[in-house]
Length: 140
Image 1 (cartoon, rainbow, N blue to C red):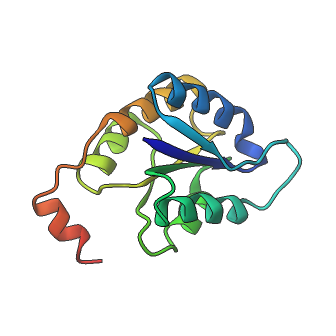
Image 2: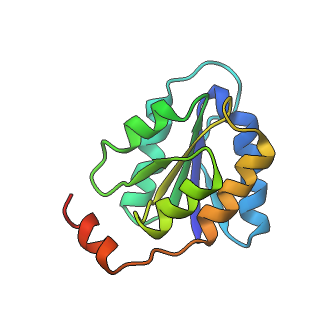
Image 3: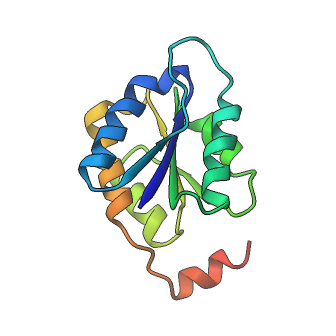
């Protein structure tokens, strides 16, 4: 898979860690920034990552800010994006299995790097179950 990843200044260190994990899992990383700790506007990075997923250039996206809340709010405004803010493994798994989430949002100031890495591993490895869940997704 090709994974678009983006962050604001609060998530840059975690973004770099997670990009390495994604590559280690055999996936391609499309790094959409940011690239420094200078303050930036997170909606700009959410827009670019979501666009990469919507237009089919990337299979999924990962967005990181301080809490993950801002990124998830912006991402879910885009038609065709199902962004999930996850802080532990169960919701990461269920967001894929039941909701076919195509964007994962993380809070760099909420989860540590070890847990974030496991969330990403789980999220990327979990397939969508389809069936009744697809019926529900098609309702929105």
